[in-house]
Length: 405
Ligand SMILES: Cc1cc2nc3c(=O)[nH]c(=O)nc-3n(C[C@H](O)[C@H](O)[C@H](O)COP(=O)(O)OP(=O)(O)OC[C@H]3O[C@@H](n4cnc5c(N)ncnc54)[C@H](O)[C@@H]3O)c2cc1C
Image 1 (cartoon, rainbow, N blue to C red):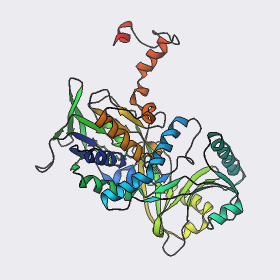
Image 2 (cartoon, protein in one colour):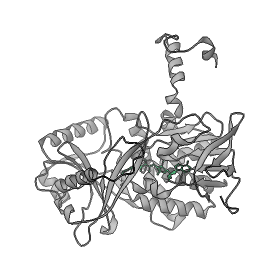
Image 3 (cartoon, rainbow, N blue to C red):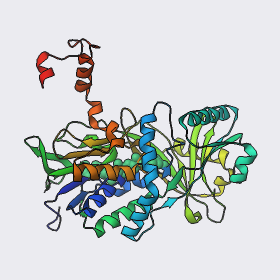
Image 4 (cartoon, rainbow, N blue to C red):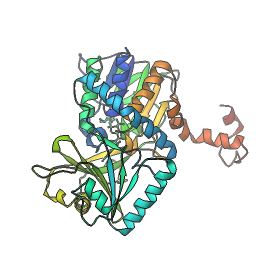
């Protein structure tokens, strides 16, 4: 850290991705002195992501509680994007829906029908389409496509534009940056006192927001945060003079899943993404790129004409239940905003609101209540089961004294 870098603040935010920047902007706009220790922007999942805003098409069996949070964030998006644009003078990247899911073969069509039935049971809006109807909406689809499902509410947001706009909006309300990485959170008498950076310098603050995505488990000085990196390889194609899809296309192709996300102005189509449990493996592999291009071609044959402009790797911040960790840490003054896994672009508006409500009013928004870090506290869960008589305390490894802690 140089002499010009900050040494004290009201709030230190760890991480310069969408969660960190959106939270910092909200807190500084409310009058707090905020420092962001940003890490490396190029490595952030927020830079790499595709930017689908897909609470409906991303819905997965068993994740119905998460669906509520996803829908709440989607509802906030239009006003959030307008506010960011006004505050920064830059485009937010928001692009209206619909999203078109398609099935390539008969097995894929059966899977799409199951998804459609599930969405219907949840009361989520979607309409099943024949192949012809799907191709009327998106003429670039392969004629062999079997069936479609139109989801009017799912949209997209150019995450790189959003990150740039949030950074600029933050700077305009006084957010300061400290270059580098946080090594540990400093504390005394069970409350945070600031952070110490990898270069040994420190920033003192009574509040620390942990928002460093897949790296959240690496910061020491706090109890371990159960976040792991879920690697994703992703491509950016430049359509050049060729037409690009008019809508976000998600495709089941011979049992695998792929998406093509067009940007405004025909400048880019994002094709993603692999899902790999390989830790922080930075390699773009021949197999990863091959599979993405192969499946993109099955859905949209025209995609083989596009220029391969970028192949990159990002790390989704995964948690044991695939839902984010939003809430107070065990140390007073510590706020957690991480673990957004495959929905972090979508969850940016609600995360900023949850963090602001916690820091400014010490209140957990109702919609965020199920996502506190305490849900991973093994001892607490065991204690609750013991109290309900469901588990033998000795088998659960607890002594009487533990129960009084
Ligand atoms: C391939 C891929 C595709 C995706 N597609 C979508 C999508 O279509 N829609 C969607 O909603 N979501 C998508 N996601 C998920 C989304 O990108 C993430 O959930 C979201 O970006 C996480 O944001 P974040 O701010 O928590 O973390 P990040 O964006 O990863 O930012 C964390 C930052 O913290 C920094 N950092 C790390 N350690 C430290 C430290 N010790 N001190 C200071 N800084 C530190 C890092 O350098 C990084 O800049 C995708 C993710 C991937 C990988």
